[in-house]
Image (cartoon, rainbow, N blue to C red; front, side, top):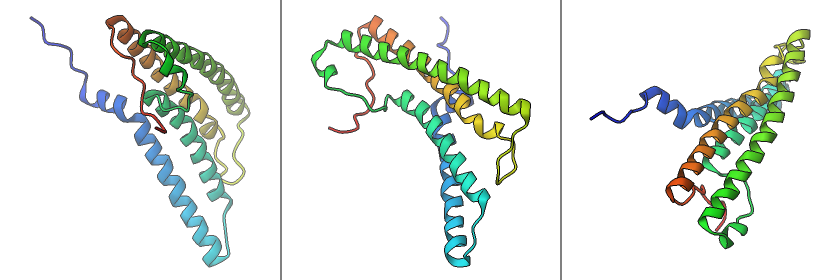
Length: 177
């Protein structure tokens, strides 16, 4: 008899917490930079261009990685009223349909964002305040969409497995009750 496969510890930890860790880093950068800028502006009557850029680009990373985290937890805003009137099997198909539509949209976003990233790479554009390559900031969308598509693949596989085994589909947490 063979032992069941146990995932590698650090790979499992990354799979479970990738978005949380990334969101924590970008949120801390955003809050700390904003706090420094407020003190600089209000106490020293001085501000910087770089602070505004760091906050802006941290927020952009927060949004795109947060979208992937929401897919993982099925926490996107949705209209749940329809789900109360359908069978568990129909509910699973509706979630699968939603995930497939999201995957198509994410595929378009990934394609077009990658193209703009490559144009920036080719021409060497830099940010105005930080004078850092815009590639680092434009990468937020392809990174977020790649993680989102990975999470969608996990969600689709989970839903198909639940459907096949007759289990109720994972619905995530409700935002409002």
